[in-house]
Each structure stands twice: as C-alpha cells, then as structure tokens.
Length: 594
Image (cartoon, rainbow, N blue to C red; front, side):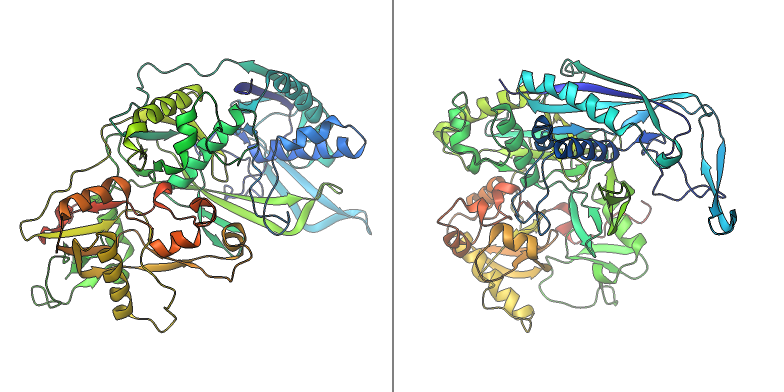
C-alpha cells in the first residue's frame, strides 16, 4: 500500500564549507553563508535535490537501471524545455537542511593566480564568511517526505545514500576541497504525532473551514518578471490547495500525480471520488489566528491629507467636503499600508533566493539560466484562512462526501502540500464557520465586493478600444443573468486584467486560437438593487457557491471537465465575495492613527 513516509536526513560535513547566500553579505564580505529566515545556516533543499538528480543521471548514463526509477521521484519540468505543458510532479520532497550553530565568527581569504605570470591576479581577492573552524564537523538536518510503497521507501534509503556518496561534496568551492561529506544519516520516523493543543479541522454542515500554518517559506508565483523572477502571492489559490490534495490522494493510491479524480478513483472513498470536481476550495487569505483579512474595496477614496471613506453608496460623483476624492491608483505607499492594516492584512516578510541551472557535464552554472524566487516568510502569529465547501454537491451525498474527505485529511496527517515552487507543506487547524450571512441594507442595496478574482461576463466582442461604458454593460448583463433577473447593477468600481501567455494557452486551450481570459480583480465593487425575485436567496447562494462562471465559457468546455479548459473556476476559489461590508456606511474610516 502506498503511504506518506517521513524521514529525517542528516548530513555531516567537514569544514571549510560554503553555500553562498544570494542576499547581501555583511560589509567587507564577498560571500556569505546561506541562512534561512530565522538566521540559521542551511543547505538549501534545491542544492540537495540538484545533487541527487545529477548523481542519479550519471548513474543512469553508466547503465544503472534503478537510477531511472529514482529520477521519476523528482518529477520533471513542463513548458518549452520539456516539450509538454502538463505538470509531472515529484513524490520526494526535502526541506531545507538546518545546520548546527557556527563555532565562531571567522573569514577565509582566497586569491586567484594569473596563470601567465604565476603571480597574484590584481583585484581577485575574495573574502568569504567561514564560521566553522577548518577540520571541524558540522551537521545539517531536515525533514524528508516520500509518497510510495514500503519497498520503494526501502529503495529510497539506499539510493539516496548512494547518490550523496557519489556527490562527495556539497556547496561552493568544491574544486579546492570544500564541503566534503563525512557521514550520511537517513532514518525513517513515525508520522508527526498530533499536537493535542491544536484542533484538527471539523465539519460544520456542508463546510470545512480551516487555517493553514506554514513552517517554511512558500512561493505561489503570481508575477513572472522577465521569466527569471517569480514573486509569490500573499494569497494561496483554492485551486492550488485542491490540486495538492488531489495529488497526495493519488500518491496514496499508487496512482500517477495528476490523474483525473472521477467515479471509481478510490473504492474506499466512492462518494468523494464521484463529487471531487464539484467541491469548492476557497482561497486561503492571510490574517490573525481567528479571522482572515478582507480585500479593501475599489470604492475607497482618500480625502485631503488622510481621511478615507467608501463612496459605493453615493448616487453620483461629486466633491466631498469641498475636495476631489483620490482613488487607490493615486495613493502613496503609506496610504495603502494604512488601509491594508485596517482591513486585517498582516505585514509579511519576503525572502529572495537566487538560483541557477547547473550543467551536469561541467558542474558549472549554465549561461542565461539565472532565476529567483521571492517567497513569503511565515510568521508564527499569521494564519491563512480557507474553507472546503460542499454546497455544489448534491445534498443527499454531502454527509458521505464530508466523512470521506475528513478521513482523507486524517490519513495525510492533516497536512496539505506540496504547494508552490518551494514545495512547502502546511498544517490544517480548526477555525469557526467560514460563511458570513447576507445582511440587507436599509436602502435595499446589495454591495458586493470581490475577495478573489473572477471571470464575469462575455468579453469576446471587446477590443482595445473598449471603455467604461462597455464594461458596465458587460457587468450589467452578467449580474442580470447570474441572478435570473433578481438583481440589477446600479454602478460598479472595478479593475480588470488579462490572464494568458504561452504556458496557460498550451495547458488549457491547446489547438484553439489564442484568447486570454478577462479577470475582474479582487476588490472590485458592484452595487446591486433588488429587481424581481428573491434577491436574498440569490446573494446567499453566491456567498456559499461563489459567483457563477458565465454560461458561454462552460459551453466551450462541455466536451471535457471544465477544470481542464478553465483555470479560474469557482471550485478553485475564484469569485468569492463579501457583502455589505461595514465600510460601505460612508463614514470616515478610523485608520488615521493605525
């Protein structure tokens, strides 16, 4: 039976040793030791995995047949270089290995010699941090997770030790003897015991709210600048959580990661298999231990030198206290910080790690292959709040689906992962109910604020000349159809962006004409009024099921599961809303002194 195996990996190295930090070094140093967000010296997990990959590739080239199977544990890339755009995810996950405390505060000097003159080369002095005395031993230890059968786990033990002995050394300056591996300790351990002080998520009817707690930085890249800087979103998409759970489930069954989950996928969990596509995973939004932050509405304005208020309920534009209001596009950095703090957003630190691909033949960095991850550093007081909702599942099956879902999470030790480019794992903790109630306003308006991006309306006829009137007509038509005429758009304050590119097109629309998706951004505000029908029931449905995907998009994806053709579905957390936030009362926000 396939299961999630837990190991500890300890590597004892002999100083001198240097794994260079990609951050700024102290004054006078040319190279500093790599450290994690807590300041501890580390062997980055990418360094360890890279050496395993190169060792197994070399063994395979020499005819060691077992090495090919080992390489499958590390997965493969996707995109142009790989020739395919479907992810081939790994089953072996290694955390950063954290080193023992440095024995001192020392440096090491090296100089390059001019080969022609056999003399010191001018300007070639390097001063490197070297906190361990030469000849001393230093140990780095970290967690390893592996999805596989018991016999595969046994093979992993031998294969990993063989690969590390093959590597012989780790880190920089290997050519002059740095980083010699003296001892490798790889031990299987029991699954982490449940922390009795932390309650696992529990079901509340058709919803399973949770909070995520991370131990290590994560990078859910939302921006790719010039193809070499991947900056993480602060929000964890529901689709990423749903996909990570699906892959972990597949691994437990001995199936290939990415296998479609459909009826018959797991004979022990038939209801969950049948309805997994319909389950809604909300985005995990950062906040305190008790509640998530809210996205500030686009209808917020700044007046004068520091007063903020919301104008969504104002019937027409005009001066406020004799002054022209400033929307967020005109605010300064400190203004955004104040507003974010008022709406519950924590200040999250970021960690930048620069990496490069290595040429296996030469052991040197490949040219033009430098890239960097800007990851979110977890804070012990910050939690990411999300929920798993079954409102889109047939009511008659909801109890069975929930019971099987809870058992699956228990089998995974109430952890979810790997997530993002750093392959981080997060612990799931219990929180209170995730769904707010729809409270109508005295004026009969429903003010809807997007908390996550959404696909709204039919944009096929829009072009670069489209303006505010075209977008208002698009939203007016969408909300009328989505509410079956129960609600009518009065006005909106919205932002949009196009989502696309070569990878997304080849992954979701291969063989079709290139067409990006038009996403309405989180924070967009729609002021609606009751028309005909039950507006209360409609809004409550949107709160639990999110805003629906336009029918024309679903029709395009009718020949396959919608998630194979549309990456921004409500089931993946898109279209989450907040209704009638307190700030919409039009009074000044009490944030001047925050």
